[in-house]
Image (cartoon, rainbow, N blue to C red):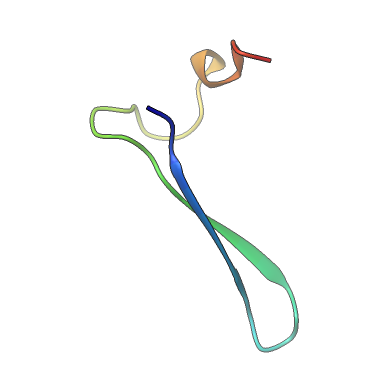
Length: 37
């Protein structure tokens, strides 16, 4: 299944996206991450 995603807001009001990739996913983004689009 896909990555787990969460958002938080820092004290200056900037939104930060946190992503936890599933076990075994290679480091960083790959072309395979965009095949469903």
